[in-house]
Length: 427
Ligand code: URA
Image (tube, rainbow, N blue to C red; front, side):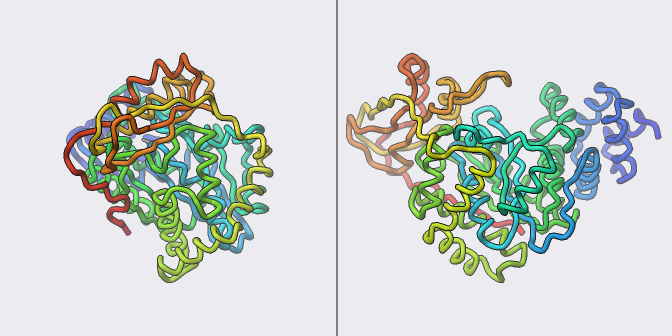
């Protein structure tokens, strides 16, 4: 095959075959196809798009570029959830142990903070001793013995994505639905799943700003998952304000524990139960989402889910009682009376980074104690001087972020309806 001819065909809007796509990815990973040719191909895909069949072929070739997990002898379904990322999104910390109480296994490979959105691994590492860098053997063994495990990807898992993502990042080809689909789905499907639920967020704190864009991405990922034999569904969810009250690392672990013991903010609980029910239904554990939700709610109220979380943390070396570190707090108050009009969730994510709770460059150390507690939500009425947020950070760090947080929470005179959290379900 000739790479230049294949790139030219894609540039002209032609459809490439599974074999041609597989050949291009293999050549890229082995180093036979140079970055400049892959960059041209990525731009051709960006401009021309891909059919569902091409996207599935790209996903499969990327998935097969490295090791994939196989689970011989297992007797229960393997399930997982992926979120496209948001501010205050701590659902993975709750959902993995919660699902593990429901006769399924959860081999969750997660990531670190990406731009303003926090990462599950950074949150868990706020627990002293918690290990996220597991080898594949240990990852699988913990998943079998505990029922759930959350860790980072190893270097031999989907190497094609690592190489291609870095290239997309510098060639303005990140925001391209087939490329995002293949990137996310190849990593998730490498876990060897039976069922997957996708939380595709839209709004001020999400990668996709509109529900229309989120819907396109969700449909593309669901179609790809199904073509590759994994029962995949998606929910579109609102990210126009942080999920729950807490944004940060240690503070989000605390809030997750609240939800695991049947308390915590209603939105975090609602989203966790809905995503959990969806994937349990897809995995065939329940006939309806309603039955599945009832079962999940029982695992929260009985304390089983919290017990499972403690078991997972201990199995991964974490010392939960030692995790109560919180930086000094100060308040941001309303300058005028009114109604909360909008919350710029993305700016709140950047404020946490500014205070040291996330990374500006990959080598930065994260301060787990930094965070923000939201005291209001969109549509709330506030009096002058009423606290809008509590900020946990050392005073100098707080000074750098105060202006960002103040202008992220807009108070005005008009009545505003709160955004609806749970949107379209895509099956
Ligand atoms: N997250 C990923 O893992 N890949 C993308 O392409 C975009 C977001």
